[in-house]
Length: 275
Image (cartoon, rainbow, N blue to C red; front, side, top):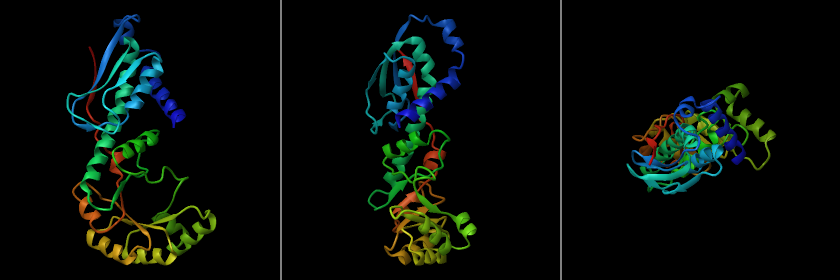
């Protein structure tokens, strides 16, 4: 994780600073040192403070970064998340990249925690999807875990999910599963996407390990859970929001995957202020 994260930070800083921060170069002495505070401007679940620290250290390895609120805990409006002491110019050049990443990660963790809270008392686990920001998947999925969720497959390489287009290309669910089983090692599970009650029956006959109930209404979903009756793990996906997640959980599914956790969270409001 560290190698790819450092590369991401380097690219983000290069994008922002490019040939130099002309405002800071004009206004701030390179001999000026400052103390700054990262401040939450609204309630949030903290995720990414370690990433923010890496951004500041990339420009100034000697910076003193002190975490005040620990990763995975809640912060209220006005709370100081961390204090930073170092060269003022370096702090200013790192500020925007550090905040962009921190704000987005806190947004994901905060939203995830709301979904987790909404299904409390049920057996359901809240999962993410591959609907992530290009280049940011690693830290976005980390933020989901910090918020109490679990990760679905990281990419196309570490999990098998046979979707509608795979089924269409193979000709049927049975044939798609047969080909997958012939190709894959025995250690990998096979998940299939089902949009109808009859497709669930086909998936069961094919002996898949996980069945995703995709964009089903509550009644159909409940009937499908009864049909599956423990023969496979059941995942629900599609059209999930904070109003529908509890009724979906109460159908008896095991996992609810939610794309909006990473594709459309609201960035949390966090600022950096010099003392």
